[in-house]
Length: 536
Image (cartoon, rainbow, N blue to C red):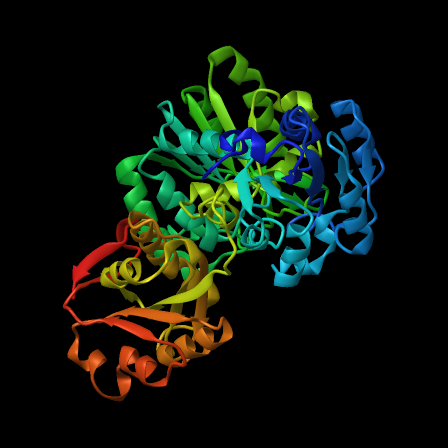
């Protein structure tokens, strides 16, 4: 990933530079100020509201005013993000001037990563600088699509520093390392928990997540929401976790009562739990006191829509009191958690903490961020050719490493747009959550294998149905110029009407490259949280 600091000055001075920022003006000002000092013509764009937050609205006048005050320069705010009026304003901009585009969250074309919208944004600039971490887990026209059409696309210093902080914290923590994981959605949290397991010493599971864990261990959970289809996977994880770390679950609960709430040490079938109890908070405080690195993901309350979780506030108070004194490091991640604590805490309570949104959850879980992957291509080289779509299918639960080797030998790396396709066969459960949980280790394994050859997977897609039919349908949809498949040595799969590579080869509208040697197959499972390799 190339940053703007690595770009020669002559490619910046006097150029039109579109900078995508998080709506944190204080942090964004450092990047914008440095570019103004190089006589750049700045176009600034951001996202406010949208998925996971409040509905997007037009940028308030306070935003450009605060940006102007921070930079010491007049910021001209436009009423649109694209269109003739925007193009005319950008053409008239002079070195050292700043234009602010309308809130990109208002445009469904941006969320859909529409080519036309991406090209309109790209036409505004000579250089694109992505300095927005909080939307980097979403493939948008303004952070992924735009990179296909701008001569230079690079990362900003704020984005690069935040990624480094996050990766260093999770992969090289100061031990003991405590992870506090709450919220819900076990299908997204379980891969995250597995990724954390090699580095953590203590794990506290709270929030709605805790009740699925307690149910898996045979305990009464009242009326709390339970993700039943994952109970077996949770049991496997608990066995693994107890061999590597100290695992703690809530010991008591705050439940709804006629007069308000009360604390109980055990739940009855009719109890409605809303938060962890007093003894559980004391237990968590004790775990925190001996930890030097603390990662907190997700609210400890049961329902995100509650006014606030008392436990979130009290644990935040403990962190606020402890961090400056004990030289501990604490990182809080996830929009749900940040929303919960923002209802009762001001910025002074978070001055010693590192706060991250939902993009951090993908990084912690070992997943690649689409916006970052889009910046991995040659940032200074010419992009006069459109990238060619190449399809690399993962049929069912198997994918060959040989396919990646074939891919590296037969394509132009700089101009390939690689699509990884996982197909959940008809014989398997038609469960999106299960498919995501099953497929993610395969995607991660293949992404690492691609990286060995300088390749990047730009898209990771899951489909259900007949593998060959879905491969052909998706290839037509993206207008694939090449399909690359690895052969499997199993005779019943390589011959007859059930041979997936053969059916694709016979019916595809584009060339199909199939490895014929007996090669390693990836039988991807979540056994012990690892992808296991088996010979074909």
